[in-house]
Image 1 (cartoon, rainbow, N blue to C red):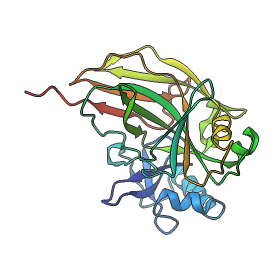
Image 2 (image 1 turned 90 degrees about the vertical axis):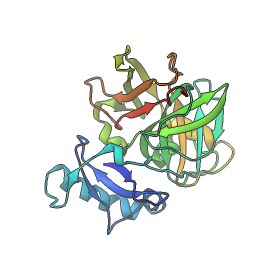
Image 3 (image 1 turned 180 degrees about the vertical axis):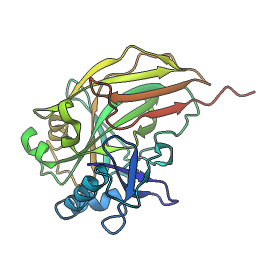
Length: 257
């Protein structure tokens, strides 16, 4: 299933189920109103949302509506933690606050994309196999840094259960391509591979993780020269070109007059 959080004036937004092709949505009212509720009681709530997703994908919900990504907050705006694990196993712990996929930046910054793995409860010292069992949802996020200092973390509008990834998901690994448009100009897509179970196990090496912890698997900094007034469109897609999590669209504030 695919889930998103529509802005409704609250800090956490209102949970919606999104169709597989990212065109339709339906409020999850009556099952859960925010994503953290689902993570806290996954075994009971997730099957109900799965049933709703099946009906949505088959066009059987009368009150379905067009999915509009620009109405989304981050799927989990206030996570219990956000930490990025790099290719060498190093861990960079950050605050657990995620900006919406369309929130502008006030200054040009370095772009560091990551696969975001949202866990359920995970015991300390769990191995990668146990961490995969605790994996609940996957998403796409970007850290923005100036001189090494984090200024914002943005999240794509949709998170998905691994079974929704199709051929892009095999043996606990995501295989995808990162597509970018810089000021409307297409950049060469880059192939990415990520193992979220290993990242979650790395975070749980010394302490237990609680439902709502997010582990980022670093996908490598983008080699782009950004400037005030620029725009950037980023999307993780399958080899066939299908968007997995919806796009992050960013505008950098223009220079002051």
